[in-house]
Amino acid sequence: MTIPVSNPKFQAFDSLGAPLTGGLVYTYEPGTTTAKTTYTDAALTTPNANPIVLDARGECDLYIDNATKMLLKTATDVTIWTIDSVYPSNNKTLGYFVSSYDDLDAAITAIGATETTLYIDSDCTLDEDQSLTQPSTLQIVFLIGYTVDGQAGASTETLTLNGPIEYGNWNPFGANITVVNPKIGTLADDATPSVKFRDKWITGGTTTITDFDDGVEGQEITVFAEHAITITDGTNIFLSGGANFVMADTDTLTIVQKADGLWYETGRGDNTA
Image (tube, rainbow, N blue to C red; front, side, top):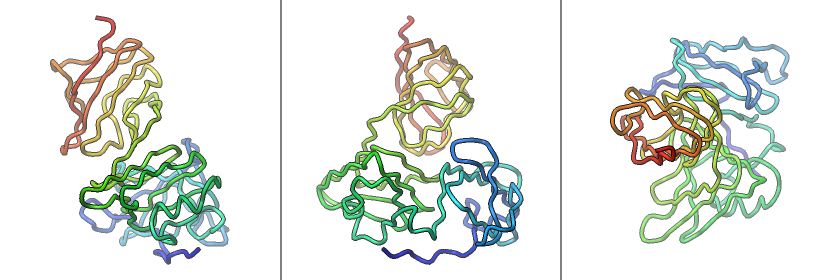
């Protein structure tokens, strides 16, 4: 297995591709808001501040010893992305890299049922007319900007997600691949829960929802209420009739995100009517 040489410093950019001068990198234990220590040196002897303030080139020295949740913000504290589990890229024991294989099919076939992580460190494809299922024991982590796609033309390639997946604020799946995610996720009990690459969600609590984070253009989601919960109309979510939807247990709501980053209702099931 080979590992590509990457930038020896952490570097971030703004939406125009310019260095994220003064940007803030917050680090936490995965799946939590508990601060996690990172380091300025490979020997892990000198802790970073938390948050780390990026220099004029948008860079910093950033070393981690195991899985770390990272939150990147602008200098004015606007969130750019959150990735729940970032792994040390120079530790071969922690995972595999798709660039070491001919394509995604070959990588997943070679890994088999091994409980590990596959890093998408280059753009990759599925074989023509291939239907591939991600093993439940395999976490797939997309490194910044890379994607997986099918073959252009009349062929049909399908990827079924059956395990954990991580990526940032881009759509990692190309136009020539059909992605199936059969699992229903549970929304976080907050005002702007993430809907990162799932299309079916059950409510996780009663906190009024004003937006859904981490959506991508064209993504359609259905929310199944298991609580009494209000979906707010008019700013980030535009609902039928221009009014809030006060959902009761068993109600459903389907919305789609357009190119403007806003959500629009396409249907609902008001089972209390």
